[in-house]
Length: 358
Image (cartoon, rainbow, N blue to C red):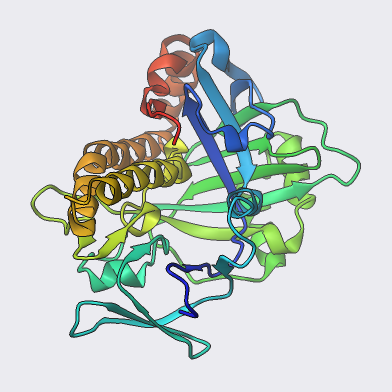
């Protein structure tokens, strides 16, 4: 590896948004990004059902929406300039006889790694090597995009949710000029992959054609290269059934280990939490010299599983409830459940993650 002791391989600066919710924030690296102060829930006819201020519910609560490209660039800025090898797509992976992991990239480069920390996403080939099944499709698909306002976007720092029948949408500003939006809808199958932005835009608009006009405007102001459609998937890590997070000197982090639906906004947060716990376990092993890397990986998996498994299940259940399409149930939701029964505090309990600064 050119004399290096470690190497970070990155496929690309992935588009999208990370919706980060923190409790008792120690993520000083994100303090430069403006916080989100409120959450509003509307019906598809534009009627506001409920509005919350995060600080009114919990003074320690912090919510930030960060463009995925900006998030990666922020994290990468704390590393040496030549630490990351971009456009490194994995072509093949296998174990060698001496216990090392052999990686072959599509450009022909071969790497032999004594330790492999795999953060290679939902369709992780490393997870497949370790015996994990493909993630399960949950019955929903989502359009996502980043609307661009060259003269500055007009929205206040607020999360906006809109609930319909079998369809829901949302939008939130992520910078002075960009607003992230999504539309989630029921679908019996993921359907064919579509990359033509004009078709994606048309399909997204069709789903919300009679909804508040600001959502339609956001879709129309979205550059072609930022609009996507994805199927929502997850993987439940059943105790005593699912493979562990690590095998020998290979360990999984983030979506590679525990893909979850975005209904709680915790996917990226959990990956960051993984990184904190794994770093601490490795640091303890190096300092003490009595714990092996393999044992550190096992300790990381044991500590993280009790948090990850319930969150994955909860995210699935929240999505299933929010995707109701029965008119009677939706009427009860819009006129009783959301306006009178929903409290933001319990909804945000899953963001509690305490840790000391590294």
